[in-house]
Image (cartoon, rainbow, N blue to C red; front, side, top):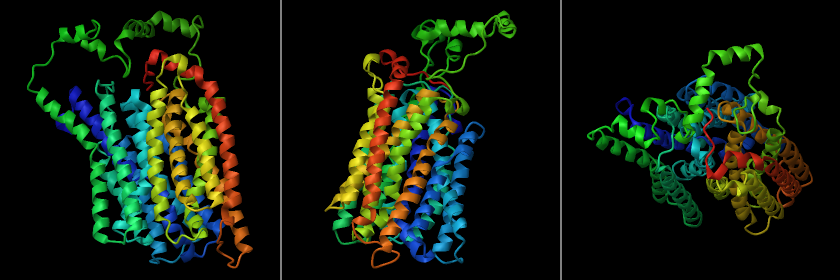
Length: 567
């Protein structure tokens, strides 16, 4: 990378290469979505009840989403070190599970198993924080798009692992745990050198077109996996066909590198050209000198030059500074919505807790279905739930990708019609309520359709919540704020999955012929009726918060102008 360390084309190469590396990291960061593949084996080997198994899932969700330490470190440590720590956590946590399930060591006490899966899943907080904070700062004008892509690949990670699980591991849960231990560590070490901030993260003219190309690649990959899943499900198992399908999938993951390669090639050609004169640069940028232009923060247009320069002069004016100290000039006011908040200041805002509550209702009820998908399939007579995990992963990806792209488009409409991103949460939660009703009904193909709807709506939550939080509370302390908001997932998992779903399942199982297993639609019916009600409450809250923050979006996106990057 040293050979391309300077110049605009070089910075663009680094920026887009960092995005491609981030995509790879996120594609192997969703280890928690494979829980349904190995949870039946855990239950059988360790003789757990459904409540114990669900609480193990809660420990996984806590690890996956509680990243306050990660948020604190995001402003203290470089991105590459955060990624390395995440890879090490995955290696240690899932490595212990592999040793126990493969019976290479004696079963550990229950609390130690909970700790191991918590550590393994916590790797996702390091991966997410490092790539999201770095990449959103590199693409400040395309936050929703970037979040949709990166969070989308976390959702697709479940389908990617499932394809590898089916093609190369022959549906062996012990081998899957070994893969979950080694692959995130290897990928993070290989890619961590490319995920780094770009000093002048301005928006290039072709950024929108390049993101469109990345979207085409992403959607093509999702459709490919969708078709491949049904082909493998309905045709006789063939190792050669499965291996080819998995290999093509991995080639799709390499495709975003070509966007960065384009800038690298353009940079090679530009080196032979004459550099533009200082006079031309000043003329093209409103009369400002090149040295003055570099002083502006990323995302600030030169139309703001007069205001910016006067503000800089005031800040350096000794008389003004003395007046502030004597009380003649008011001290710095508290931040307003749309400016940089720290975590403590955010916690004092009603909008923050409303956003947390809506996220809690949506992802908390959604993760209840995800954690229990293996047992839901067994209760409804399916011996193999691979297709449901894959469907959920693919549509989780499409929900994140679509939620980010659509909310980004409509948030930039003229100020009088600006649509707050959270309004899309309301629609997603209504649709998720339908998915829960399908799970409760347990009719023909309802599990297939329910998995699709659930995955899509679950994904929308992440691609909408992340940029919304950055717009309301800024990017300067975003690592801490983001990791606090994601705690809505484990809190919901603890309440809905660990307490309600586990208790109701074991209660139904005690009344059946087998004391430890429940068969039939009634096993989860009441659970999902409750989850549907939770989603409707969350939808109403999303509408309310959308009304509250609409003026904020009108001020941030006046005349379609993107919000400035607040570092």
